[in-house]
Length: 208
Image 1 (cartoon, rainbow, N blue to C red):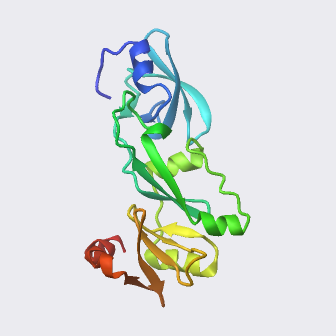
Image 2: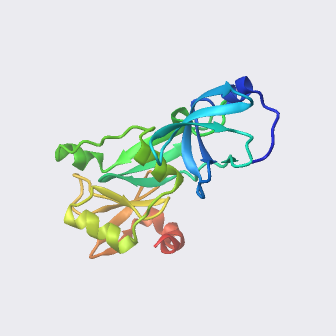
Image 3: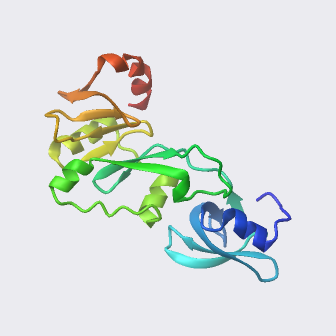
């Protein structure tokens, strides 16, 4: 990671209570870690919960074996359980860096059908599986996303950060969403864009 002269108290004031991607202790991959505390123990040491291992660990920030990515995830749709969740950044001045729930507006798609089926959404922002999807989304191919909705195995499935397919009680056909806007329907396995969303055809083609 890039060297810094931040004291433990400054690091805690800036990143405490947020998620950062951290590679530590011989790991080859970055893990999302929630910064619970920062202590001074021969240097700046973060006490954090690793979303991958679900363990609380202490990591020397400036050790040679430690690398921190300061990049935020590219927000948009993620798949979570049987629904899809759209995340959009809150446009306001932020005094904290790192990723945290107050920075992000989240909206669950497929919630109406989930509620009708009495399926628990089990959604918490800091849930490990949710955070892992935020930093490394797992999207389905378009055809598989359609099949999941048609079969009732899912109530909403995202096939890119911008597009999701949703079952909705007000419509007989599955709904296509672009971000949080209605964009059209899925009919006979293909997309029928609404008149106002014809300009999305190229973006949709790339997403598929």
